[in-house]
Amino acid sequence: MDRQMTTRILIVDDDPGFRKLLETILAQEGYAVESAGRVGDARRLCGQHSFSLVISDLKLPDGDGLDVQKWFVEHAPGTPFVLVTGFGTVATAVEAMKRGALDYLEKPLRSPDELRRLVRRALALKTEERESLPQPEGPVPTPGLCGHVVARDQRMLHILALLGKVAPTPATVLLLGESGVGKEVIARCLHAHSRRASRPFVAVNAAALAPSLIESELFGHERGSFTGAVERHAGVFERADGGTLFLDEIGELDAGLQAKLLRVLQEKTFERVGGGKPVEVDVRVIAATNRDLAASVQAGRFRSDLYFRLSTFPIEIPPLRERPADIDALAGLFLERAARGLERPYLKLGEKALYALRAHSWPGNVRELENAMERAAILADEEIGPEHFAFAATPAAGAAAVAGSLNMRDLERRAIEEALQRHKGNRTHAARELGISLRTLQYRLKEFGLTGL
Image 1 (spheres, rainbow, N blue to C red):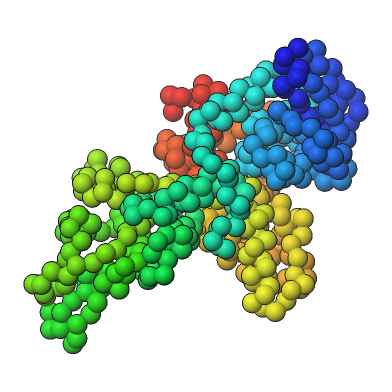
Image 2: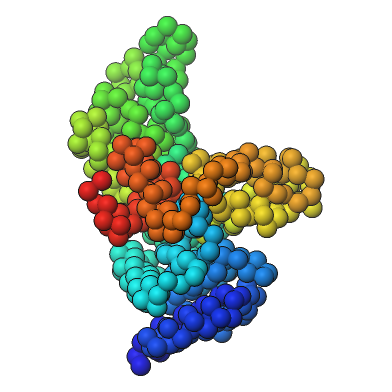
């Protein structure tokens, strides 16, 4: 009876017979069960109860299962979601993983035990995830901190909470994440909430500079120090004096520059190229990279002492594909900006366009989404649809044929095996292609008995 009070499950399906079947099986297991036949009914019930699990059909009279999931992401984030579908294709399996579904149930139900195992597995996995995630201390920040960071995903909200704690301190911060996730936006947010907010914020991308220019750009040079040096040049450390210096792609620095950077961080002094007089600076450094610096240290490509100096306070920013709750909010923000710039305030984002955005894997992350929305705003006359996105190609014609008589789990297993084969067993790259987190991939490998791959 205790479980009855603590574990409430919502079933959303427009088939009364199938809905009743699931209700009966779960009620016999001691779960409290609510049911709905439409997206609107599910939303109403969400306002009345807290649910430990949602099991929703993909096809509904007034929308689909993604509408139900979106509603719960916005109003009850963290609620486990299971997708029910009778349309078994590889594309459906991969898309469901991208959308964050913990599991899938295929129609018709093969046995009551299938449902019982699925529910126990989904609830256990969610408990495991909740216990493994770091919990923010204090109140959760309001989404939209700094006027630039829009977040609905719980991990991003946690990052914003961390920013509020580290920003007022002098600690060096290392931002980790793929290109385009918004590392410079986070760095500017840190500066804006620091005690240096009234002083300069200077950003430099080490990967964008020619090797012969990096030292001069970082530390400056004296007149006549090399051909073309017709006057003294102040580097970014001098220009950021009293403020914040954002060093992007720090992993691209060669060994010599790594040693000089370490000296600046330790002694607060450096010498310009061609100069012999020490220059003192007071600069807070925020570094960023899309590389695995720990692996670079192991391989001897990056100094361990510099790595530990930079990583006083590391923050890893997840890629956009791992935080689907942010996609709608960011798309709305970018569309509003683009419409304002184009003086077209009547532009709106259609439901089909939203589905296309949620299904995309976003290899270019937030930057790609911003560009996609700007392009769509230029092309659309009034309502933005999937046809206005360059990435919204139709699924391969043979996708449905490949399915054959395979069930969803067979299809999912095949998609994972093929991705691993294409990437020669590299799980990180395979997860990136599938649009899921590495942790989710590892869970699936264990479940399918593929841990030896």
